Image (tube, rainbow, N blue to C red):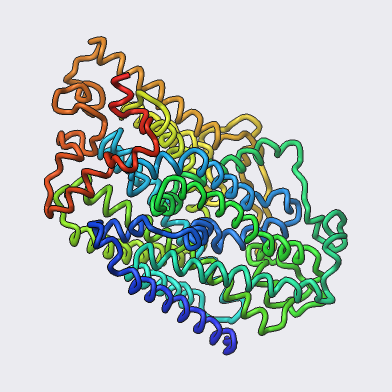
Length: 592
């Protein structure tokens, strides 16, 4: 193995820069929130709710602009038979941020939530919050693992270092500065990382375009010039239109119910600020995707026989997923390719650190503190967060080394976030009258309908064959192995999401009627979701620990200022003034 020393030095310099920025951000904001009486744990989770417009816009953009985003966009544009028409991530995630800003950012921020799971525990109780934590955690962990795996493959292509070593070192750096500074370190390093992504890729594009092996991308956009390569604009065949729409809805709506997004929303100084940050980030997502689209088009316009890569194209070597680093290495001068490599590394770290922090925030607050240890001190919660940041980071790193299955696990888990969490978020924020019974039914329906459709990337066969299904033949060009996969052309992911939503509403009202009419005895309300809601001890829906009959304003304080944090989570008058009609389940609704 010949290690490229120049590339290794460039990576070391870049990693040191990121590490120093992360440590500086932690030091700069070490006393943030102390004067205002904000707990240190909340400062780590949501940055004291004082993230500025400039830093906020960058860190919100970094929610989705990561290694998978820039590599995946380039791959889809390059792939024969797909092209730009199937590169849905830029517009899908941009619209996700727009929809999130229009409808979700204001109610979530104005009610003073700390994590995405807070409204679920508020309405459905701690047990249901724990169930919903599972797909949320899976999504964050497998996302981190997938992009770390992509980084390892990229580094191995350009500078020939061991994949495992590059993954472990990258993860350790991200874990360290996240441990030290929490959201502040993540946010400030996002500024540096996105700047490196933008500059690194844009510097590389002119050199790649001017390479003699690259044809005019304006011509190859609509015309095939090279063997085994089609026009890179691509097209959507008639039988695939519903599948295309299903995937687009997954990106647009399924990109909302993620803690990495709401962590930024909830860190904004106001609900209006949170909306503005979402809109700015949507614009940022489009801008950051342009160089990836151009690099994918360059890959599709290259006669690889004229390059150092060799006569066999990346697609024929089953390396389409690495088209971006391949273009950087073989179509750009070495000093430029190493600069572009820093951009790819930046993209990966900007997403990995966010997901690790998001997962640990949900566990420390919604599982450890609100479900099991309501009287836990702020210092205890901070230590739980630090331990879980390290544990979840280590788990993501371990999964990243399982390159054969990590992408399939990511695809399935992201689908479950869309199918299970998104419809329940709609219910708790906008639909009156849903309860835990409906939530459980929605969870089960969504899970069965999605998993029943199978997952080709995991070689998980379907047990539900939706209308329009077909058998697709997949040939591995290197091994010549042939696979036969079931392709579901029906939009079953969106159908599963809608079924989950409707089942929540229907079963909630069904059980409410059965208990209130006396058809079912109150003793069978084992989830305390209907009868207990009308008891004299619980006069409103602002309870997180239903079974223990403990309201947020009744939780025993450990320190004088701790009671403020927990009690005010859903009752802060200064935040509720931004939204008088604060909740579909609030007492104000019940009294109308």
